[in-house]
Image (cartoon, rainbow, N blue to C red; front, side, top):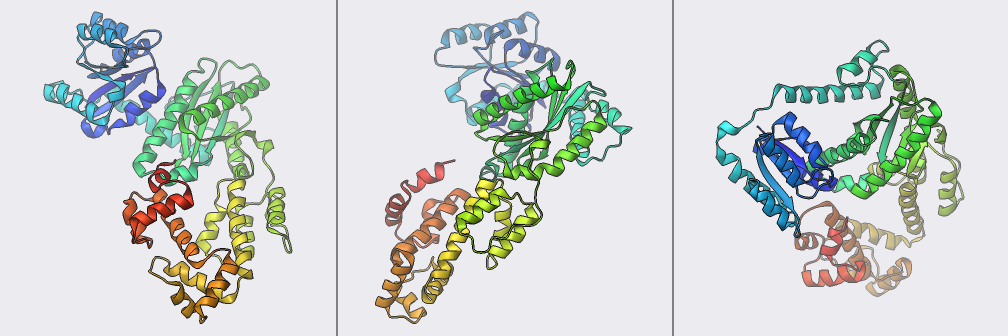
Length: 497
């Protein structure tokens, strides 16, 4: 398996390169990445890669300087240079130093990378293939040990006697003066997760973990840290933060505040996701830190009621196990009452079963699982308003709506629905518009468009096929109607994040 080193001062470029192709499937392993030539040179000396992908313009030591150093030290390896449109003079210099090829960053595509690999490495013969070393196998083993350690740590399963030695075994500090742990929860994650394939999720997990680790690496030697997944499916990560030189708990708390703010900025910049950060208090030994994590995890449900930001356990609201009485309240008064009375998830479920008894159980569970109070209240308002409206409808109109919900994809006419509810078509038309505030055809069109919108966001089917399945036989008419009702074309709507 060939080793690859990536050198570029742009974190996003490094991340993109690592995720661009399935390197291992093509016989390669990313042995490391660096943000300048000096860091890259050290990695090359250690790893002896078969391929170096390097930017031309980097701080500390640029790409030209890196290649010169490699030649002087007789460090072997194929070299692919990345450049911008204005870097041709540097590229020319690099070519004289004996690089294999160069790519403009505008041409950085999976196809071009694979073409380079095929031409310069795969055809060079199997004798050039560098097997994974024992050191690399040890690294892989250590990563698995760390994953197991943090899983047991989060569950509180490691005993006091085992904690220091277990930490040392996986490369973590055996002892420390002060340390804290942080649980990271991504807001907006539920929407993002629905758009991800399993492969997308794996790439995101790698990219997010690398961002955290790169951020922590920049804090040394004042801080040593390690990121770890908690529940990636739920958008939760953890950070272990060790302060080797801190002299007081107050100094650690102040530093934690600054770190949380910086990390939030990075997550928003690179992933467009706000963070909720929940911190333990600084602790002086592993057992105390594990107990603090447990205490924090037990209260983490309370984050549902807090906006993005950084919190300590004492900032969390106390959750009530019983919902307040809401009899006779309007929708807005009810939502205000829920805002003032933080509830456990089970209490929210009990409340929903009471208020929305006729609703499907799966829909109620999805509503209770909203990731934050604003999302919960917005969905609840919609449900309650619809319920109140339905209760005020004429029985024949309610019956018609039930028929439409189950058969809106079919070629229904107003006369057919009127006959189904035993009303004269003209009277039904007047009654429907009076109750619904819109005519039958308009309501049916909006019902179908709503179904199309949902599928545009949740599937990769052809738009024409989706429209036909949801009841639109005339595709040009569908496109005009969609633009009229939504304000965008179907293509524009699907492309939105």
